[in-house]
Amino acid sequence: MAAPFTRLARRAIETAWRDHACRRLATGPPKSDRPVILRPDDARPAAAVPRSVSSLTEPPRQPPPSSPSINDIGHQLKRRIQLVGKVSTAEFMRTVLTAPSGGYYMRTDVFGAGGDFTTSPEISPLFGEMIGAWLLNHWQVSNSPKKVNLIEFGPGRGTLMHDVLRIFARFKAVDAVHVHFVEKSPALLRVQAEMLGVPLGADLVQTEPVHGKSERFGIQVTWHQSVDTVPDDDFSLILAHEFFDALPALSFTRTERGWREVLVDLDEKGPYPFRLVTANAHTVASRSLLVDPNEAGSSSNLGRVSPPAHVRSLTLSPDSFILTENLSKRIINRGGAALIIDYGYATPAPKEMTLRAFRGHKEVHLFDKIGMSDLTVDVDFEYLAAAAQAHGAYCTAATPQGEFLEALGIGQRLARLLGDPRQAEHHQTLKSGVERLTSPTDMGQRFKAMAIVPQNQYPDNLVPGLRPRASPPSTASA
Image: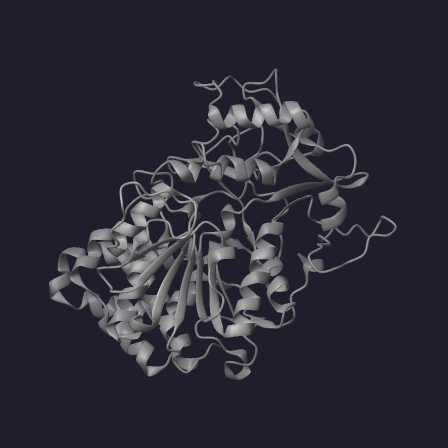
C-alpha cells in the first residue's frame, strides 16, 4: 500500500492536459520490447540457445554480415586492444556510446519511430503528467522549498522534462525551479533546448556547463557533462528515466574455477571484428566485485555481490553504484528525492548477462556496425538500493511501472480524457498508449520504478505509488 497524493498534486493531474500534447503521441516499439539477452555469437534470445563458457571463448562462426567493414569507433577499440590487450565490456560500452568522436549518443537524435527505440514519454504525455504530479507531491510534503534543483540524467529529447514542467507551471511551482540536465551529447543538447524553448548560439562548445533560459517556462536551464558540476546546495528532485541501463557495465561468468570476467577481444577469423572471451584468471574486477564462497579470503563488503547458485553469468555496473551513492548523499544532506524508472529486475537475478545491442527497433549482433547501435543492460535495482541505503536514505522496493502509474491515477486520467469530445480524434491513440505503458505483457511489468527519499519522510515509509521495502537490500543477494 502506498500513500495518497496531496490535494495539490491530484489537482495537477486533473487539470494539466493541453490539446497540443497529442502531437507527441508516438508509434514504434519501445525499449521494453527488447529480449532478455543477446548471445554473443547469435542474434537470437538466449532462451533459444543456452550459453556455455566454451561458447564465450570460441563462439560458433556465422555467415559474414552484409557490411563487415569496421568504422571509426571500431578502429579505436581495435587499436586499444592491440596496444593493451582485451578490454572490459564496461570500457566497450563507454567507448561505443559516448566517445566524443563518433559515439552512438553523440551523433544524432536516436529516439522515436525513426530512431532505434521509443521511450515512455514519447508514447503518451500522460506518462510525464504522472511523473510531474509525483514530483510536485514530494515538493509539497517537503514544505515547498523556495529553491529546487530539478535534475534529469540522460534527458533524451527533453520530452519528459517538458511534461513535468507543465505540471509545475500549472500551480506556479515552476518559479522555484532551476533545471539541470546531465547530457554528454551536443546533438541531443540542442534537441532538448528546442523542446524547452531555450535559445542557444550557433557556436556552442560543450566544454563546461552550458547556461540558458527557457522562454517557454521562464526558468534557468543548465547542461552538464557530469554530475560533478551539478550544484548540491539546494533541495533536489532527480529523474533518471532509462538512464542506468546505458551506464557502462562489467560482465562475468561462472566457471569451474570460480567467477571470471568476460572481456572483449579481437577476432581475426570471424565475421565480426570482435568477440567475447572469458578471462583465464581473476581480473581486478572479478576479485574485487564478486564474493566467491569457495575461495579463501573472499568476504562481503559494500558494493560486492554474491550471486545465487542458479546464476551462471552476471552484468554489474560499478558506475551505477557510485552514482546512486552520490544521489543519496545529496538527498540526505539537502532534502529531495530521486525517481529511477528503467527496465530491469530486483529478484530473482537473470541467469545470463544482459548486455545487448539494438538498431532500428530490433536486436542485432553485439559487434555489428559498432557505434550505430544502442547498447543496454538490465538494471539491478537491489544493487542500487544497497548503495542508497548504505548512506542513510530510504529506498522503496522496485515497483512494476504499470502498478506505479495506475496507483498515481493514469487510468482515471485516461477516462476523463476519453469522456471529452474535444479529444475524440485522439481517443484510440490515448488508449493504446496507456495500454502499452501499463500492460503486464508490455512495458507495465518489464519496467520498474524506485524512489530514494529521506528516511521517515513518509509515515511508515509509504511513498505514493511505490511498494514499501520489506527488508534491507543486500548486494549479497543480487
